Length: 428
Image (cartoon, rainbow, N blue to C red):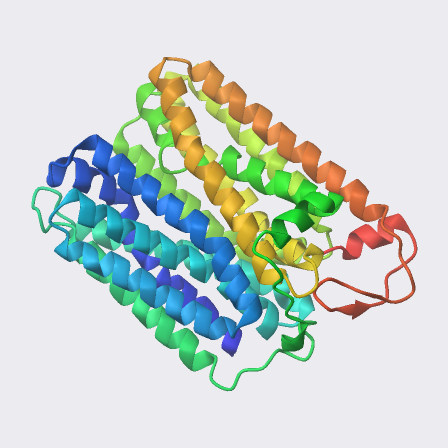
């Protein structure tokens, strides 16, 4: 029951993302007349807030009650985005966006720790999958509702988005707070509250550098983020408009198709891939990214069906997304040093945020210079690197020793089979 409430709360919380972020650039630059520099700075400060807060939130979730960390972080996000209603200058708007990013990002690793604590190991992929689907629905619903209510022709035209986001984060915090009353770790979660070992702030990063499995997982995280998520809201729409000459309606349709396919096939994909190892599935995700970029490359040579191919690409990306989040988070948690699960998840979130923030800048530079082939070639190469990194991770995990009894970094005691093939089948 607690995991269902967490999924519901995550979905409601993401209403704010969909209701505000797609519109805040145009609102700041044009509606309020603060210019593109202020609008870009707001996006950058949001990302900086996320970069700072994710590892910090994860460390707090290791040291203290992750329910309290999640609730306080989401209330901070609600405060930040709600305060944007009263922003009358670029400075106050930038501060609000920074606080918004802080709260939103700090809650993410804390909620992931809650999944790990409240769910048995065997059900983690399923719950992470449902959580991801719920968040996608929340974002889509927030964007859809805001799209019909937001009026960027008025100074208060985005207030409905800000208030919707604040209400969503507040309600999400209340649900998680109620779900966490009297909660203890699931007896089969493999996590013990006494295992906390927060260490120093940079210990998680040092652990990632020292562990081959974590290093390759970090490479996979970064490359898969750069290969799609970093371009979802900026680079891909820019490519569609400037190179494929696709109208904005097709871009909106593509985003809707992406969300619908995730919702329709997520449960089926989880069942079909339940016995597949995490590295193998991540290789599949990277391969899907490669296929998607090849379709995008072909679209420029078939202008009569370019819009259809662009929409199809978003659908293909969605298939990979149904494996990405449900697999990557449990894998990272299983490889994390004992007592540092939250810090490790937060550090990975910070890496993903950093490189995702760089993505739109790269796309803008390449597409602005008329280097569409360079834009496509770069992301095709990045996706191939993700496939290679997943293959290397599979080899590293298959080569691990397999004693009769082992205790994972998450505290799970298990009997591992002796052969590398069998070991891979139970990894993550």
